[in-house]
Length: 127
Image (cartoon, rainbow, N blue to C red):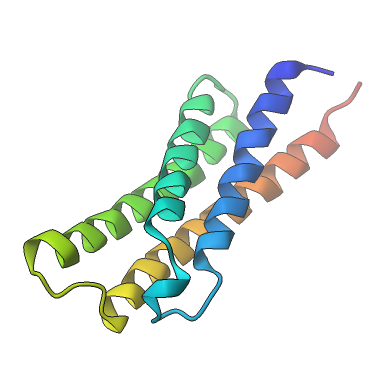
């Protein structure tokens, strides 16, 4: 067992599960989507992206691309959250919450693609 691959797989799966946990709940109810969970999702996705930077294979490039998409969508959600609270003073209305959760849902899809690619790569590796 390679500890680096365990660490790598751990962060990819953790990014997916945390992101899924944030998205679950009614889309327009702010009390179902906590800011600390969203922060943890962003941090873990950034770590997962950094771990993918060293892989120079074609599969590594696709994994990095999916991770970059997830991080971009999560950062867009963070900007929407920040702007709603600190710039426009409208707060967490159902519309704002739905926008943030929609962006996080896109990141979930990108994370699912990452996990599927990781599983495919793992299955095709020959001993």
